[in-house]
Length: 297
Image (cartoon, rainbow, N blue to C red; front, side):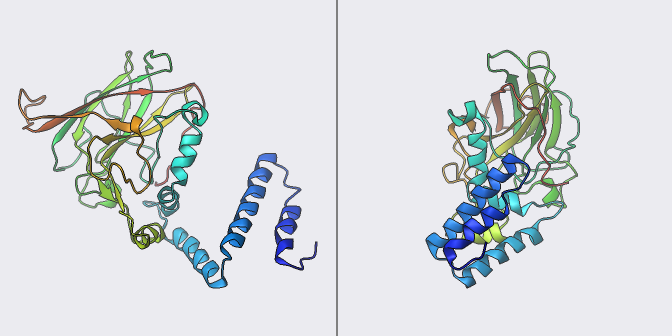
């Protein structure tokens, strides 16, 4: 159709896409065009502002690499990642869920680690943390043989792929749940950290006068055929920025009880007070056991 006014543009685009063979792709594309055009009309987007927006998209692409995914970070910082997560977990979004953001730093092939083993693979300062976890189904029965990826940032606020001073796969490990659904490991107490602010996502956050920080947390990915893959985080209770996470990832269900021990017999000969323990139970539900696309290689 020929376009005469601004009101003709949206119908013309929708008409051009009508032969898309996949119904779901067509539904998404139609909604995307309608909402984007409505957004531009609502704010009366100027040409200069449109150019700036295109520049941000280009910047996201240029900033993304094998070790950093700026697109996921941008989605996180506008709350889109958390919204999608909450809509698709916890009884289809009707209840609070134990699922959380994958984040931009998961790696597919973390080292297989024995039950109770350490994931500290190079000298890393910080108080020792001994974590015991259990994976159960929706009826509370243990889930044996599940694969569990664990990863977190160091006390410098960086993941090992960001930090040349850390060994490859430091503070990362893959575990298998035992017959009782349990796995355990030793690490250090995680620390909060700022997101990278040298790309479009960080520039936006700083321009909005927001804190660019994430509260301290551990990442977990739990995978077993027959169960929906659970991607989650367990936050340190009382951590700074717990109520203003820059990527909106904290829910009440994800705040763990990290117990501080300043006396008593240490759990290992090389441990001095204070040390911490965490006991946490994960609930998985039946569903798709597929793995997400790794954001970094």
